[in-house]
Image 1 (tube, rainbow, N blue to C red):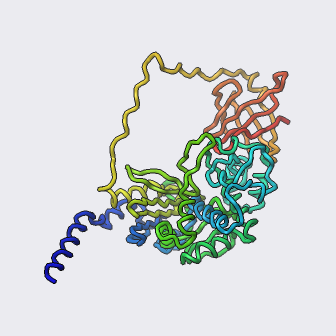
Image 2: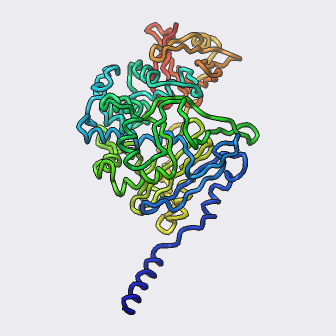
Image 3: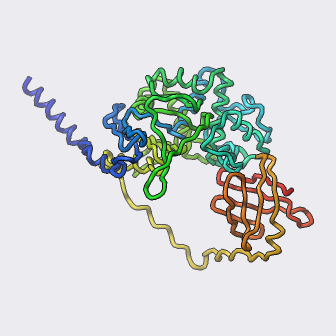
Length: 469
């Protein structure tokens, strides 16, 4: 008995030496120190190891007006981190035989134009569909993001688009339209809203009692944290949205509930291993290239360790869930401030716990380009005369947005005047090409050389046609 005890004790000592003690709580507190003060919104962090929530704490306030602090039970909107639940719903429906991820999207959404090449459900899951991002389209159309929009509003603007950004499967470009359309497909394939389906098939079985897809802006949510954006001179202003469409976002949850979801990746109670594998399967482009994006999740690495993650951003809410599968370790960070940067902070927390397993080698220096092979200098932008600018000024109409924009001249400069926003100065970059931040305009001309319109590019939308009136 004595020798057995000694052997057991030796094993315990060896295991203790192999597993470094966790960092002190004060080390995690330091990461969020700037938020731990009165009158400041902040973040809630949860640390999960071996499917147990080993650390959970709130920093800052869920509601500044009523001095309500953030806690692990605070409910926050996780923005695009929601996409994995939409993807899981689609994969569950496939398991139930109600759809195939290789189905043509128009099988369920016949309102979409026939673009030529088939857009499949898998293209939507991987962000390889080429369908223009509806949030960017709404922004260009002047929609007020503080207001209320519905499924019908989102579907209407998507189905008005006459072209894709690129042929399906040829590129990867993040598009919220794809995941909103997945919510429509869930409803039409199952007969239930995404909120109802996910509640019955995911959230209830995993005992995620504080989690739901928020599809009604009038719904009262107990312990909901308000969202804020930085204001002048260190102050904060309320930054909330009444959008009701789901799929691309709109999950309200807590760090405690997300820890239960995290456990399902190791002990898959919902969907089995097939669901986990489907969520983690990276997309493949038409040319055979594998992309990091899977189904609502991003495969990657952090300091040498494989990591699976997805961030979220909506109104003043920010979120991050990063999982290190080989270490069975995850960090959840949910913020109610637009400058919260939970992606960086979640990784800082992970660094504290996994430092001994991480590498921090500097990237290899880029090879120097020989002088003879250097690219020629970019030519200076063309000089435009007042007459040149005058020929561009006018009113332009987009049938795809059902809205107008104007090009105007002020102090010998060209300005883009879109709906719902201030005039934006346009800088020439080449003949008939202008830009203002992410906004790019390409002037088009008729066969006679007269200006007949322009094509607008803005990040997640390309080639949006405006015709001169």
